[in-house]
Length: 203
Image 1 (spheres, rainbow, N blue to C red):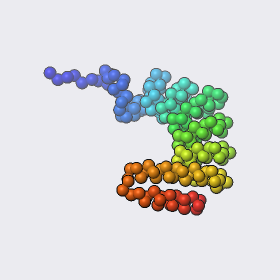
Image 2: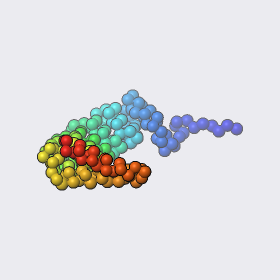
Image 3: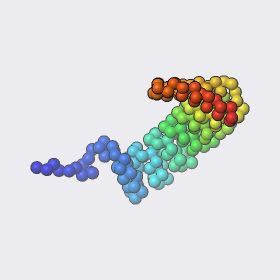
Image 4: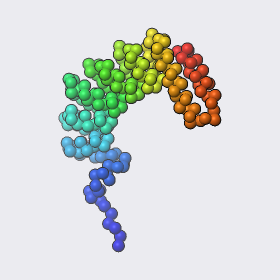
């Protein structure tokens, strides 16, 4: 006797939401059937689905659920919700989920705490941070996370010995890790250090 196939209605939620296809189906459903309950389910599975939620239903609570799933959903949060202490917590949650969300943080909510959270997750986030927040401490944290982030540091900070030292240390660390992976090519370490040092002098 053949086993009866489950319909979509009969499937457990865990089974349904395991697939990317179902997340996309929810997003498309949201375009035509906009109920608060469906909105919550949709953004829980795909934060960017917030863009299809009517602005009247984009509450602070729903927006928080969305950015915790996908930080870049901050782009679709209404401006009126990006004000006050709760708005700061919303932006912080978004940045911690995806450092690139710093690009969508309003100037009025930008703080060193937010900037630091962004670069500690991804040094390249330094590219999206306003110049006035690019302190030695912040740039050092960015370079420590990813030495290539040095390119986004202000020139006067980039030339500081302490930042150059951090840059070289991260280069060496990266190459030592690569050396462990490819012990048959020990000279790569010295070649890469020379290459990165030359690049640093040329910036």
